[in-house]
Length: 70
Image (cartoon, rainbow, N blue to C red):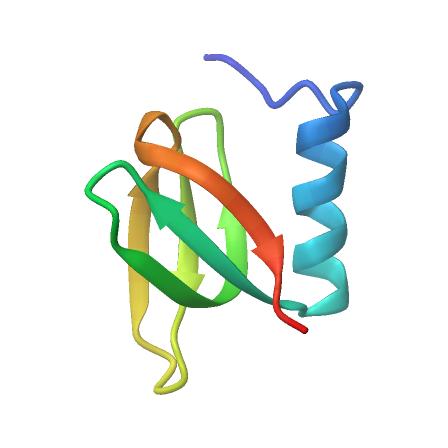
């Protein structure tokens, strides 16, 4: 089973977003913009919790960008 490479800057940055409970925008290849807090990540996906604590699983390959909300 593959493990996250915590030596990668992108993995560390997402881990910090999780730890700090930072609200983020996640743009996906369908041009949808998802807003919430990253709950967890694994080698294939991340889980985004919206304002209602509803989880959305997003495949990494579908992500265009993740950025903190102002």
